[in-house]
Structure formats: C-alpha cells, structure tokens
Image (cartoon, rainbow, N blue to C red; front, side, top):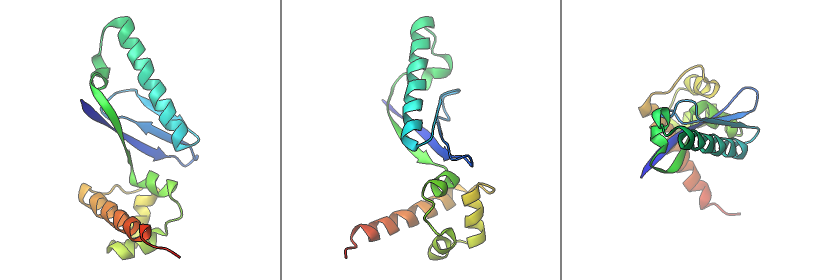
Length: 135
C-alpha cells in the first residue's frame, strides 16, 4: 500500500484547496481545511466511480493501491492557516533572513527543500517546547 501526498494551500480569498500532485484533476476545496479534506475524499470517490464505469485507471493509477493520505502544507498555506506566527521573529529564531521568510509567507518566493526542512524542524522544536510549558 502507498501513502499519497496531498498539498494544502490557503488562497488569498480565504478558501482552502487540497490537491494530490501525482493524480491529475483530483482536488478539494472548502471554507475550512476540514471541508477541503471532505471535498478531496468526494473527488477520490468520483474517480473510483469513473474507474468502475470504464474499467480504466489511466490518470487515477496512484489511487489504485493507496492506504492513506499524508497532508502537507505549502509554506504560504501554512503561514496563512497559522497566521498568529510573527514570521519575522520566527525567522530570526531560526537564523533565516526575515525578508526572505516574509516572501515565503506571501508565496512570492518558493523555499528550497533544505530550507523547508529547516523551517519544519524549527516549528517542531517550538511545538515541543510549548508542549511542556505550564502556568
């Protein structure tokens, strides 16, 4: 069984979209992330209905043996979803140029795979630190 990767984005209009890069034409949209995930599942179900009717997997072949969906954010979508982050302060904490981090947030610049790992590691480190905080 295979895990499909789905990318979550949040548009300037406030709507969420989720797509599976390995499957042409399969996407979901909604006012919330949860709605977009339901919409994505509906699109997958429609693809299965198409396969049942035609017997042809064609573009839907990656759906044939998947077991789960791994949801990933694009950086811009992450920062739009979790808009309480001060990206300039976050960049400073991670040793990343603040101006560059703001461009990642707006989507005007795409981060390299290494930069994405660096940001992800920094976010996870902060999450671990917060998880043991009490008042």
